[in-house]
Image: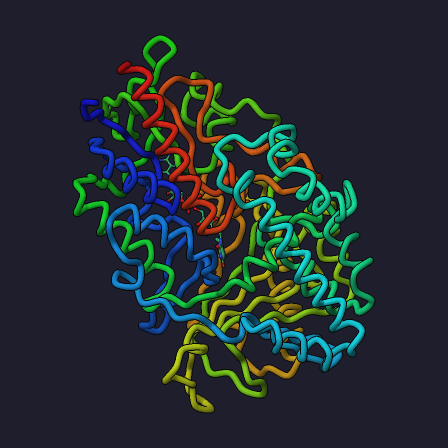
Length: 500
Ligand SMILES: Cc1cc2nc3c(=O)[nH]c(=O)nc-3n(C[C@H](O)[C@H](O)[C@H](O)COP(=O)(O)OP(=O)(O)OC[C@H]3O[C@@H](n4cnc5c(N)ncnc54)[C@H](O)[C@@H]3O)c2cc1C
């Protein structure tokens, strides 16, 4: 097969992986991105002269990258320094209780027992077995599959898999399932929070999302140099394989000749000819016609509710009062109110759950001394209203106050505001990720059919393919990477069938 010119729009995780895969297959690839560097949502902000991860921080499913590097003839550990964490996350409640979840199931069993008693620890053990069974049932026929359908999935998982899935309770939400599984509200909260990894409400997300518990228990790693180092590594490897990158280059339109893609038009007016295009921005941009009327046809599924956005604070400041770990979560009561505020009232939560990534912790050899500033990312969920009138300063300040007040009630002392803090909001995310309203995970995974409603790599427009967290198999760094592989495979298949 002769080498074809392929343009990829977007140098986020999906775009980078698609570029690498296509270059491996001998294609001539150009990647354009409106931003200034590779990574998209993987990014660092500089505060007080410190580079601080301000996008994704939890690295899971390393097998996705092991397999990718393997196909490139490389070893992941030789290219990136990954360190497994013993404590997956440390959880605090404002009633004074706390619990660590460990990579070692035995340690987690003891921790659950200490928090909520032996009976609850036994239920936790059953929950882990069930989460593993759900994950194992769905990895091959859903996560890895390019085009899963409910019918195909039913056939492929067989009687045993069907037993696993129907055992969750048909149509039951994640919260509904956890309410039956655990009696302790804190454990329900802790595991329900996994719905937010796909930007969804635990009250509307299907119970199958409990598989994220298994994903975390299989391992959480730190990346030396931060998550940005992962993007940097993929970018370097792509450049070494001949991929051309053009940053600060906005793609205005995807061009068609007849029914087939013929290239892209840049904001500068320049045209890039291509026999195929991978769009690796949020697919909502295509649906809204931002890439031209003809490319609208690429996304045929009905528009679904947007996933969560976030308010984040990037800080370099000392903390005291609590022994933080790397990943920390602060909960308060009235968990349901948070999602009611966000998804129904479309307002910032009055009772936010706070995630705090203490990025200097969890790696051997460093523990900040009392009074020494450390690198922190603080994140709370927010509605994806970045294309609506701006949130008022009062609403933002109230949410900030409530978030830092929660950490204070749990015992953590930290300075909330000042010049050493950088904030982002749904409006900033919307500017960087067009058509999203600041939604960070594509469409919300609400209802059991949502798993099949995401756009796929192959589109009805000939020569146009999709990758990224808004398309199948879904959001998150490893899933977006998988989408890049699926898009590249679909593109190679189509070139093969065209040439034959
Ligand atoms: C604050 C935050 C925390 C997160 N936490 C985690 C976590 O801990 N673990 C995890 O696994 N995931 C996490 N995620 C989600 C994860 O980051 C994303 O799902 C994933 O990185 C999305 O990758 P993507 O391929 O969709 O590309 P994106 O990162 O969305 O990048 C898309 C790129 O396309 C470019 N683009 C779009 N349109 C155009 C155009 N018309 N012309 C040119 N360029 C264009 C944009 O500039 C952007 O660079 C988090 C995300 C955020 C924001």
